[in-house]
Structures are given as structure tokens and as C-alpha cells.
Length: 259
DNA sequence: ATGACCGCTCATAGCGGA
Image 1 (cartoon, rainbow, N blue to C red):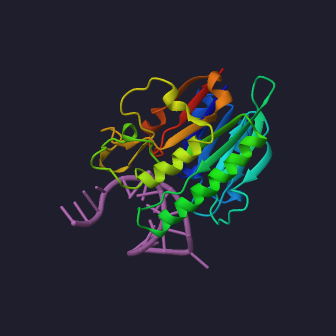
Image 2: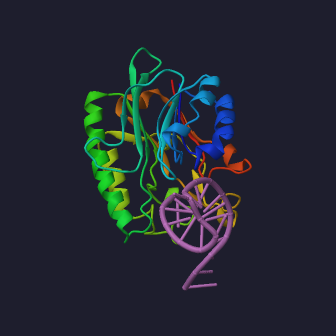
Image 3: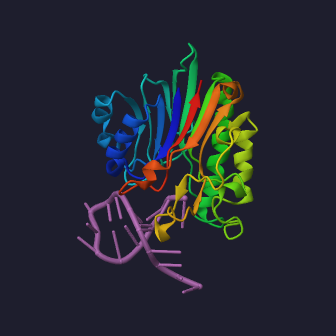
């Protein structure tokens, strides 16, 4: 089965590209981030026509997340329980795992953080702490778990186009990476690094300065999987094709294959 | 040193993104 995540940077603008991509890449569960629309504007009918169900959690102007799936999602949770937040960043649901079991899927749009000395960075740290505590509890309830989305954090220098120039900048600070390691230490694995990858593999490129053409990007979109899913993982790739579209998202989809 | 590009908003400049 295929599991994927894609920050679409406005679903209203990118809907045709998402539908085209799904037609070419049938996917069991696709997590979307940055819908930038309210719940009443979510294109549920368009996905239904394409054979997909959806769970969504939007808001005006910013943020917004969804899970697009072939099977219905159950036990849906929106945002981190107990963590007061006026931003729509998290959606979780349970799906059939293709082998008669169940798969818990969490799609998340992690805070950007803006700059390491900003209020938004403080919020990012608090949010990451709350996410970790909740995911830890989710893993006890749901042993087969996928945590995917736009993390807005690089793991290390391999995830940066300019490790020297970008050292210590947002997405690349020690503080953010410690929080990412705290998630990993729950028993989650970065599925992308289970496999050999091309050098300079990124999932996001700035719209400015021909960054995509020059492959000046970051790898900040991740699919983390629980220990008992590792043996089923057969591939994890970043699909750069949609980044070449006209009017593309600045992010590319990341796709995990489970046997 | 700065801004670049993109999407959005009770718009027409400013914010947030990354």
C-alpha cells in the first residue's frame, strides 16, 4: 500500500494538481497540509468523484490539514487533545492496513517557527512537546502508527542545500532537532533514510531565485513509522514531478510503500 | 545589506511562509 504526504500551499489553487497526481499515483492515505480554506470550502465532491474519501480540518487563510483515503477513516482526532490551539494543524484517523489489521495515521503541519528568537519559535517548541506527549499515548493505543507531514525541521546536514550558510537558521536549529529526536525516541523511524537516496534529496524549494531549478532546498517533509512497520516498508521516495508543474506548490509529495 | 516568490485578505500593502 501507498502512504503519502504533501503540503499543497492552498488546496483551492492546487486541487487539479492533487487530482492529477492521485490519478497517476493511486494512494491509500494521502495527508495534505496548508489547505488554506475553511471547512465549508473543502472539495469533498471532487475527491469522491475520483474515488477518495476525506477527513479535513480547515481554517480561514492559513494552515488546514486533511487525510484523503480510499477506505473510510475512523476514530478521527483534530489537533492535539488538551493543547489549546487556534490553528488547524493535526488530523488523525484509523484505516485498514491492507493485511487485516489497522493503521493509525497522523497528518500534521508543524509550526514554521519563523526565527529562533521569535514568539513563533516558542510556540513551535511548546507544540512539539505537546505533540510528543500525545503521540506517545497514541502509540500505546495504536501499535501500528504513521506520523507524517510538513515537519518544518531538517534532521541534519544531508537535508540542507547549504549546510554552512543555513547552520542555526530556522528548520535547522539544535533546539528543533532535539524535539525531532524526541519523537524518534518514542520508537519512530524516518522511513526515507531506511533506503539509499540520491544526494541532495529535498522536499521543499523556495519559490524565489530559481531554487528548484538549482536544487536549493530542504528536506522538511517526513514520514515516520512505528517499529513494527519497518519490515513492511519497501520504498520511500520524494516525487519531484509535481514541483515542475505550472503554478506548483513549493513542496513535493513524499511517498512510502508498505508491502 | 536587502529582497527575491507565492497565496491570502471585508485587499490594493502587509502578513506568513520557509
